[in-house]
Image 1 (cartoon, rainbow, N blue to C red):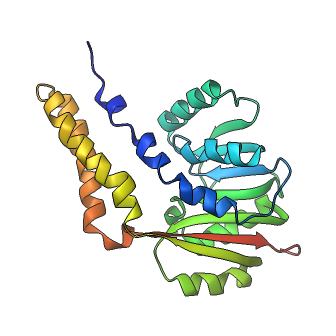
Image 2: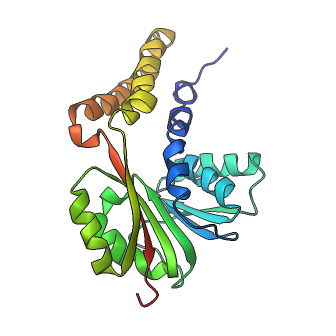
Length: 226
């Protein structure tokens, strides 16, 4: 039997354990009838698929990693959601949607690419007036960000901190234990060991940077005049 180390490192399984926080943030929004949602930095679509299920709306997932989008496209077809989820290889810096295209813009773990303030500024025009923006960001100055929100033509709705241990307990810790087990399985496969080394480097980086230990969801509404 031929084994595939990439398939064995099933990150989506671990990432799905954190969907409880996606659901919590979604419940902070009012009930919307089949909203149009943009998921920025969707990756392989763990959150994208959940947003489609939660909202019964239509979701566009964008990312610049085509391999991740290819995996998501397979999952969309398997879930029977081809009519409700579309993917696009697109940078968050180069979005060309018409103004007011979306009822909700959602982004988890991606805004570090452009920063909190720029995300609010650059993405606002794609949200319909009185539409919503939900950001899941690394820890930072929470009070400063909350104070910034109304200055950028949004109304702050709510926020919550994801527990510091959540990413370790549900994602990186189980991933590290999986890597340890796969070391033996692929002990005679140098290429697989390189892939495992890369995954372990990611775990080690997480452990070495306290700012990664914890994150915050911010929920806000675009003002009608913005």
